[in-house]
Image (cartoon, rainbow, N blue to C red; front, side, top):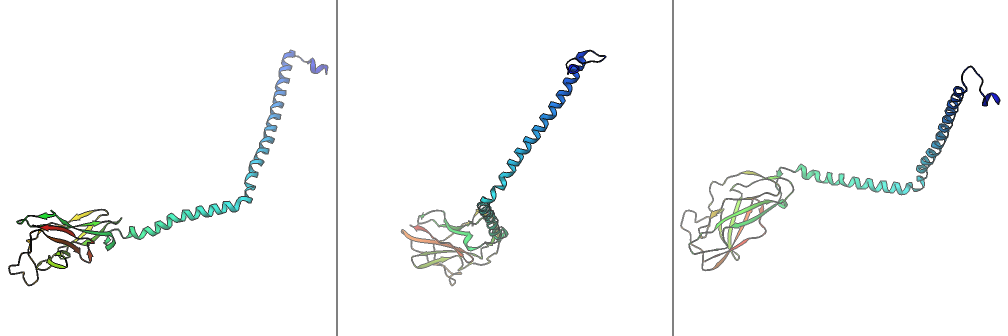
Length: 223
């Protein structure tokens, strides 16, 4: 003990004390490291135990997972359902995506005014489509009550076919033609035709393209 408290050697006692302090420091550091390792392992075991406690709740988790999986499959199902729509992009227009409307330049005409008639074709679908919009496919009809007075088909010659692509949401309007306020029929194409009644008489313009017909007609007055 005396040699520990009073170091004996060729060097000064302070040198031996510094050496002993260094050794003691190293030993203390080793002890601290060992303690930290033991504590760290203890914490690791605790956190690892948490997942092992989840099996009791795993049915719910499984149900939740199954529900999420079903939810995830819905978008793919809708995506697959919408695939035909995307595939139909650029295909022939269907009746349910085309809306036709009669177009007039006025709602009432004076005694010397000829109505300018046309039609609009709107693609209400979410994909572009194409259809024949040539004059051979267009039909404009003027009637009053149950009686038809005029049709663009009665004396048409040289009808054309024209395949047109209509973008989603796009509306096209045909060139307007003037109705000369006369009755038409296939038998009067090369003869003079009688004029229709004016003086405030009401008429209706109806339009169609191919097998698609406008749901509503447009009313106008001839004075």
